[in-house]
Length: 385
Image (tube, rainbow, N blue to C red; front, side, top):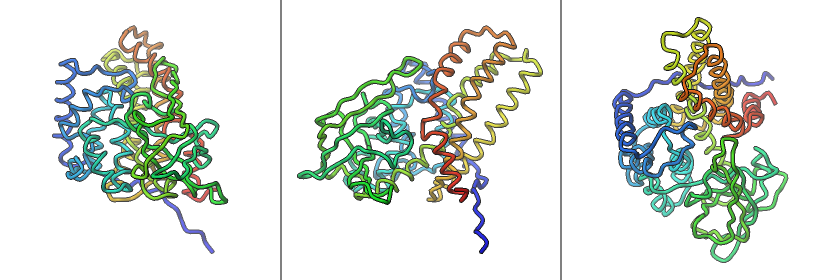
């Protein structure tokens, strides 16, 4: 019997007619708040954290944009949200305070959470008042989430957590963390027995947070330890045992967004500004090559956003966008470095930005899933393994 053909679906998608007005709104807000000293452009783009800017974006209805109004959302489309995300990335705006909750945790609560959880968590997220961390990766597990060992055991009125998470961004300052934990013993079914829980990081017992300082010298990452940490029943997200299905759908939101290839856009733009009319033919070709790849990645990413808008779960397409985006984002600083050397550029602002990005670039291969894991997802999706 002939095997069925498998296709990646990157259907052409067009941004909505409202895109122009949305861009103007975001740019005006960013210019106004930057001029007022609320924030400064961050060399590492969206990894910067600024609660005041997040609140301003929330006041403007630019967080939780796709959510129902009864939960604080604006009932806009995924493609409209995409436009806003592009503008924030292009400006290098520090948005990490609300980023994870807006991008993946909020949608997961909306899809799987109880009504009380939706009313409790979604409105303050949409206002830019509540910050979440993501508890997926664990020491010695790499990107193999199915091998997690953090366990949650039944206790009166809830669960007792024991274990640890690593690379937990901003866990030292976030109010809550959504963690993938094992609520049943391991079995022959690797993806069974896992659940997600919402952990109050500020008021729960038995939590220790240890910093992990990255190459640029920043404290964004952490290792988090749980020792008999109590999580009440009303903080179980979804049904027990459904954690794997929930987390894989969540990763589609995490992996396919424009941050996977636009994080270094401000570096590329700074290079173009520094070159002006003096660029050699070789530099022009190099920049043109980067821009053409960027355009192709953007088209694929917009297609995934359109699929999410249609209620689909494009896990394979998201993994491919993330993998190709990682390659691109690590190539940008190398290309800029070569051009800066060859053209003799001495622009200090550009050179400082380049130093920050070069130090951050190695981390791109593990953010949102290691390259090997992503390629495995694509291979399985195409029935190549």
